[in-house]
Length: 310
Ligand code: CP
Image 1 (tube, rainbow, N blue to C red):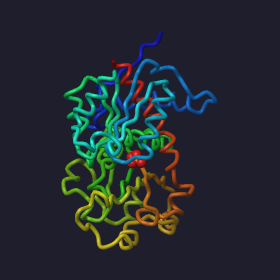
Image 2 (image 1 turned 180 degrees about the vertical axis):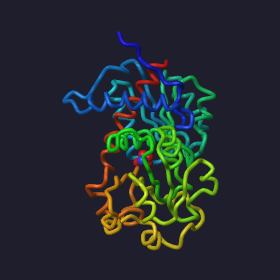
Image 3 (image 1 turned 180 degrees about the horizontal axis):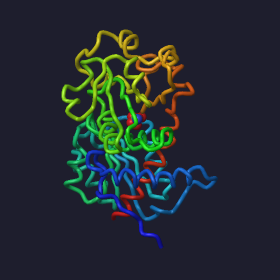
Image 4 (image 1 turned 60 degrees about the horizontal axis):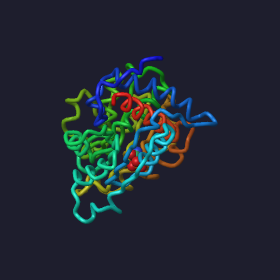
């Protein structure tokens, strides 16, 4: 029987903690699972004896459904927990909540939480494998993995490829995880947005900064366009959404005026007409729904490889 290759870690808390070898192993495993989920019978018995809790303290559409589908395609037992309809509302702590769930013999926890570092905190206190499904403005590792996997499908090896990340970088866990992931794969990364939405330290990470969207698009092979995260903005970072769309939004006229074809990505949810117009989001340049499809295969790979480390 073939030996299962293993990740260097028993949790996926952030891309920062994965090696390039881990990322390649996840991609190779996801390639196989993508083939499985396109078969008439999409289910495999790999996680038949594993129970997984999906613990969400923040809203989610894609990540939550994608993890649940990935778990069910692998034949895991799945329980879903939503903080908004739980005893968290009665004052229960994160650790008490999770320990109560674990005492029901849960093996793995997928957690989204508004506080940066919440999954790391949990990993120091409990035995289950933990997967970070987004912690505040910190990291969203499986989003970055599915983004890079989708880029790899379009461009092949990402070594030397030029990736522009556009939009609200300062509030984005997707941006940080993408930067770590793409750099580990040898890609060049540029961020673009208004100065107020670009972190001051970012060039120290080896990322270049551009404030002119046209120039960023002319430079890149792929534009990963991020949502303006109004729910995390206590201050006013730009005068109005209309002005943001005018100066930083990506529209079809702008794309058509480039002398090359670029790949358009967005992790969702989209603010149509703000950071991206519908005629770009729904165009032949866009791989937004392929990203969502790939999310299931990539999350199957992560769950499968972590289960192998148990
Ligand atoms: N991309 C992403 O994390 O989307 P959700 O918030 O809907 O999970």
